[in-house]
Amino acid sequence: MATDEISSLKQKIHQLECELAEQKQKNSDMERAKTSAAADVGELPIAVNEFEETLRRLVQRTAMIVQAEKCVIMVRDRETGDFFARSPAFGMTEDEVSRFRVPLQSGVSGEVYRTGTPTIFHDAELNALAQEEHLPDLRVRNGVTVPLIVEKRDDDSRVVDRLTIGVLHCFNKRYSGEFIDEDVRLLERLSRNAAAVIANAQMFQEIVEEKQKLVHTLESITAGLILINQHGRIGQMNAQARTMFDVGEEALGKPMAEVLKHEDCLAIINRKIEEAARSQDDVEIEPEVEVLPKTPDEVSIFDSEAEEYIYQVHAAAVRDDSEKPIGTVVIFNDITDIRNVERMKTEFVSIVSHELRTPLTPMKGFVRTLLDDENEEWYTLEDRREFYTIIDSNVDRLSRLINDLLNVSRIEKTGVEGIEMNWEDVDIRKSAEAVLDIQKGMTDKHTFVIDFEPEAIIAETDPDKIQNILQNLVSNAIKYSPAGGEVRIIGRIEPETETLLIGIRDQGMGIPETAQKKLFTKFYRVDNKSTRKVGGTGIGLFLVKNLVDAHKGHIWVESETGQGTTFWFRIPLHHPKPVGETIESENASDE
Ligand code: ADP
Image (cartoon, rainbow, N blue to C red; front, side, top):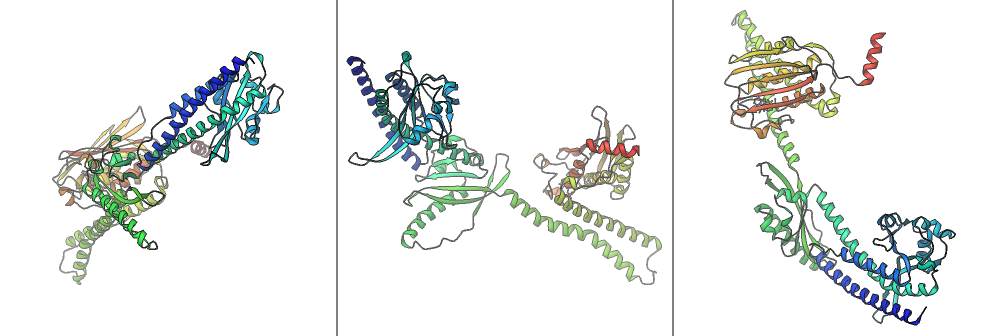
């Protein structure tokens, strides 16, 4: 090689070393920014693009210096342990880079990484390690590979530790040349600085990725989570917490009192911060003190539709390695459902006791009256028959209630699948008439209409279950229209879909829109002045919905407060049999 060529190369190496030193400085700046940002639980600066640019220049210049067509850096994948080519590479397409992966112990990369010694191969087709790494597939003819070693030095610049973080490949010497030992020396010199830059950038990138992973994890947890930094500002707020307090991502960095406009929450958080500060002092005086678990605080938060949500609030101090508090983490657990069920259970017990006692009182009264008339002389036969009828209808009411309760517990245990169905062709008009016959006796304020088109409708259903559905809906229509009015049972056949549509319409108090979506929930009752006067357990519609589901049907409600309500349900006209069952039953009928 001519002397002036060597001196020009030396100059280029010097230039490259200056650039790398500059990048090293940038990396250590990033490192500082990263440490302070992590302490502040704020955003990290994203310098990944800058690193890519440096890497691009590095591979390009390195290829130029050793006159290679391709230059690529391989590092370890933390998750799989394989070597993979870092993008950008020089002289390789994005696709080739993404395909370039080898197990840690294989190929030229594995060998150089393991031994820490550079290597040259002259013919990829004949070299076993190059073959193992599928280098010929990447159109590689020959190459030189050096390890990327990071050196840790002490204050006197003595190397105290060495760590191999990857390898640097240069492939295909230009002008059909061969790589020589001089190339190895040049690469070794370049690779030391390159390794330091990559190690730093990699560490930085890992921290950015770790942070992003953490943010994504926090975002996806169902509890609300807020990190408050030591300056009382929002350091992190996950999606659930943002929804709870109806704020967007702009809340980050703002003072907490500005974002969490909820007196109780702020009071709890402030108290926890104080407790954390106090317990910090306590730890110093009496480190052995056992901290007893405290009962968690609860807050009620109303959403934009005035719906109440109850959260259990847990807060804890976040401390750094030296136990100094650097912020507070607050977690909100949604316990609305638990509290509602508890509330409903308490109400349910008192409602059911009341509902059970209601029929018992007249039964006891009339039985006592009859018993007192020892010689059957005080009451006429007609009076006595009336007393027996009242007792009889109250026994029916009691047994209906007990049946409903048993059915609820059965559905809870086995779900809708557990409802045993006895399918047969049922005259739905007759079922409606039978229900009205029973219900008519309960009221003299209501008129009843059966509005069927066609007049007679036959559907393959379970007769008892259909009767139970109609019974519940008609009895509700009467109960919740105390002023009277018309109760209409509508029946239609929908030939296109082979379904039956049934509606039970009243002219009663109606159901507020907010309550409509919860109607079919177990124990749910609309609680207002009008409904409080009417008895009930809140299980009727839950049962009805499950019975409609067992028919593979669908139920919904249309209602306007003060105007009336229509409960609609749609079920198939024929029992939708699973394929296997059809074949079996057809065979059975053949026999
Ligand atoms: P309940 O035993 O309370 O009647 P249901 O499950 O049958 O229980 O009904 C749940 C709630 O739905 C009732 O408490 C009532 O507030 C409301 N509701 C049901 N049917 C009607 C109706 N036809 N008109 C108005 N409100 C109704």
